[in-house]
Image (cartoon, rainbow, N blue to C red; front, side):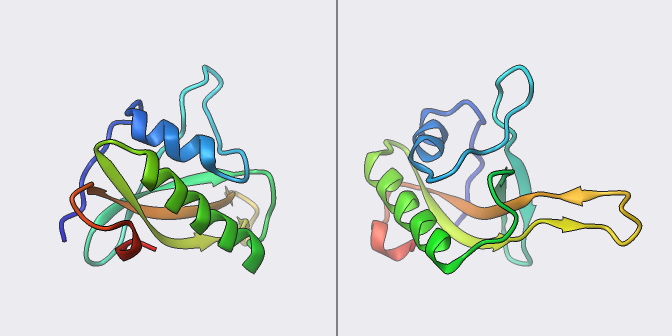
Amino acid sequence: MKYESIDIEHPDIELLVQDLPFKVRHFTDGRLILSEAVSPNSNGYYLRTADFKAWSNVMISKLKASIKEANEKTDEFMFEFWSTSDYEVEFNKDRVWEASFSFGVKLKDIEVEDLI
């Protein structure tokens, strides 16, 4: 199945973000920070949060449920959960990575259950 590109201002992304059980990072002007995530087989995206530093099993379950709920509301695209990453600091404290989750985007011609 082919993964798609999605515009940061697409209404389906807005639906995904509003259903999340935590806040995601935005630029100071209010635009969502949507970063590209590259895996060996496809391209996707990731969203960052500063609400916590480590993903618990409960929070991952809530995240997956939120993605499923968003997929039921979207018009054009569906989101596929890929993975989570905890907060990290580079060994010399030169760089920080906030907790994030990655996901793929597909056209909405497939079943929701296939994505979660």
